[in-house]
Image 1 (tube, one colour):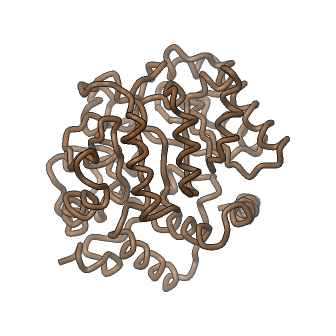
Image 2 (spheres, one colour):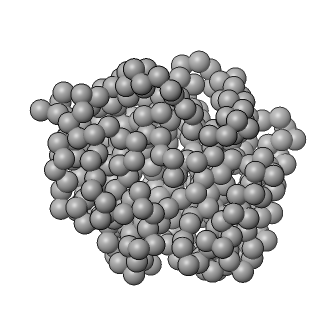
Image 3 (cartoon, one colour):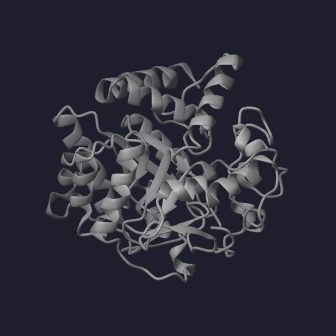
Length: 368
C-alpha cells in the first residue's frame, strides 16, 4: 500500500474504533486480517498490513480456532427478487424458486446470531435486490435492536431516492451501506446493469454521501465495481480515480461462474487468482462464511446460488448445528486438500492469503 493509502486506512480505522468500541473493533481487525483478499478489498478501510510474521500467525491461528464455534460472517438473502438483469449475475440461470423470507424466520436467524456473536458480519443480501423487500427497514431495525454491530447492506441503488429510502436505511443505524456502480460512464454502466438507470444510482450515491456527512455520522459508504473484462474494463481506471477524488471507499469485485451455473462466462475472463487451472495450495476462504437463502436453505457457500449442495435448513436446524456439522465436514476436506466434486468444478475458489493445506494455523479438529 502507498503511504497516502495507509494514512487514509488508519484514519478510517480510528473512526471505526470511535463508532463501535474496543472489542468489536478488535474483532473487525482480526477478521479483516484472517480473510484478507487483495483483489476484492484493495482500497477499503478493512485492509491493513502486518509485517511481523509471528504476530501474523498468532492472529490467524486464534481466528480459525475461534471461528469453529459459530460463523464469523453470514449472508441473509431476505429476497431473491430483483429489478435488474445484470450481465454477471446468477439469476439468469437459476432454477430454484424466487421469494422473500418471512419475518418470523428472519427474526429467528437474527436471534440466534445475537445469542452467539453480536459482532458477526451480517450481510443483508443474496442474489436479489434487498430494497425490493417491503420489510427491509423493519428487518434492519430489529437487527440493530438485538445488538448486532456489523450489518452490511448492498444495493443496486435504483430505489434509493423513492420515498427517501436512503435516509431510512442510514437512520436504521446499520454500519455499512454499499452501492453497486459498475461503470463510470452511462454507456458502460448500462451494458452491465440491464434495465438500470445510471442517473438514479449516481444520484443515490451522492444522496447517501451528503446525508452521512451532513449529520456527521460514522456510517461506512462503500462502492462496488463488478469487473467484467470485455464489458467494463475500459472504465475501471476512471472509476477508481473518481472514487479516490470523492474520498469514497471502494472495492473491485471479480467475476464468478457460480459453480458452473454461468458457463457462458468464459473462464478466461476470470481473475487469475481465482482461475481453476492454477494449482491451489490452500482451502477456499468462502467456507468461513455461510449464506441463508430466503427459503431457509444453507448451501455449501455463497457461490452456490442455485442450491446445488444444500447443507441444511434453518427452519428445522440451528445455524450453529449446520456450521459445526455438515459445513465443518466441507472445511475439513478443504484443509486436508481434498476438494469435494462441487468445489473441484468451481472456478471461483478464493485461496489467496489463506494458510496452506494442513497448516497448524487451522484447529486440530480440521487437520485430523
